[in-house]
Amino acid sequence: MKEGTFMIVLVVNCGSSSLKYQLVNMDNEEVMAKGLVEKITLPDAQLTHKWGDQKKEVVQPIPDHKVAVKLVLDILTDPEVGVIKSMDEIDAVGHRVVHGGEEFAASTLITDEVMKALEKCSAFAPLHNPPNIVGIKACEAIMPNVPQVAVFDTSFHQTMPAKAYMYGLPYEYYENDGIRRYGFHGTSHRYVADRIAEVMGKKKEDLRIINCHLGNGSSLAAIQNGKCVDTTMGFTPLAGMLMGPRCGDIDPAIVVTLMDKHGFTTKEMDTIMNKKSGVLGISGVSSDFRDLGEAAAAGNKRAQLALDMFHYQVRKLIGALAAAMGGVDVITFTAGVGENGIEDRAAICNGLEYLGAVLDEERNNVRGKDTCISTDDSTCALYVIPTNEEIMIARDTKDIVSAR
Ligand code: ADP
Image 1 (cartoon, protein in one colour):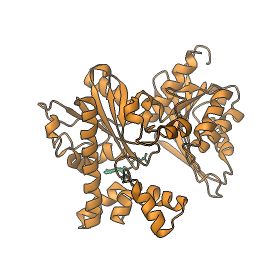
Image 2 (cartoon, helix red, strand yellow):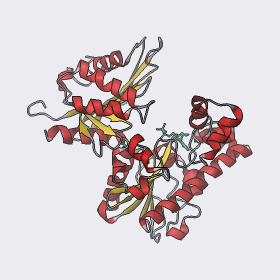
Image 3 (spheres, rainbow, N blue to C red):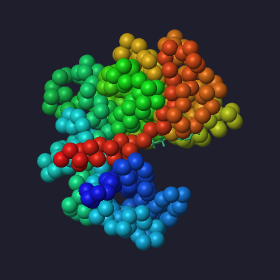
Image 4 (cartoon, helix red, strand yellow):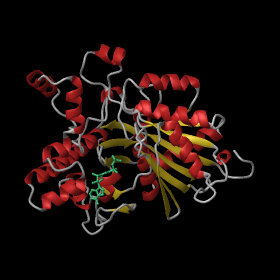
């Protein structure tokens, strides 16, 4: 770190054709700049860079992630639109990595050994881990002396007991193939658990929390004594409630039945379940909850059915996770739908009164702000807590790099 100055962390989240970044001053957790590179590999790739209330867009061919990282560093250090003078001011890079398997129960400094373990975990997340690894390699190539940290979507869930993470399949598939529940959105669940304790002025060790991360992909986590005890996503992020384009939990026999009947390949079946199902598949309208709300209001019955199914399944899963903890003290809503879907929250909470959770309609009229939305006499509180996965990645990165 630069002598006498603060630590600056670059947070990187690489997808197959995208790279999201945030530059964070860890002295005060201020976001100095952030942005998104889209359509990497295509001729009309685009970088959108934001700092303060300003924005700059660059459209140019970006052949690979290394060029994307270089472009991000160029714009961060640009004399006109940049926020730092040189890339030497970046003290550490924190990477979002989707799958850490059973190897990683916490964020970790990236070493050659860790890279090997990450490659191994790619088998579990073939769509997500490879671009994460490409992003790490690109940063290492361009900033060889800057420490890099990996923060996993799965690690928060590694505290689940075996009775929660095992599937009722022959034990050898767990031992030999790693087939078990891993859970995802862990960084978001961890952030919200910390934040709700802070907002309520309680220790998270004293709370039984159900966090509802409801976005395009959705998952719930039961958090007791600050630790995840169960979650709704599984071996992959396909499990749990139906989501934007994903089917969620279905009878596994449906898969073989459809493959047999229609001769689908595994890839075709995978595409149906991941991209053509969920509220999109039911409604035939959209995977976006705003579109569904509008269509339902205009009388589209299938859009209404999709919403009804989503709300019902979330409510049912809240019941299951409350049972897992023997009760619940606070239910939190986060991510796109959780933070903004006023009607969605109302529909989900309509029927949670038996848990002592009573929604206050007026307080619920809120978007994207830490807010208590339950009545004063609710014995189980309801809250909106906007998630912030980037700050969690930056905090872990700072802690790990400072402790070296
Ligand atoms: P991702 O899983 O891609 O990170 P987000 O957390 O950004 O997803 O959530 C995206 C979802 O949030 C979309 O379905 C979008 O419709 C929904 N959303 C955003 N704003 C609203 C709103 N005002 N009301 C209901 N849903 C909303």
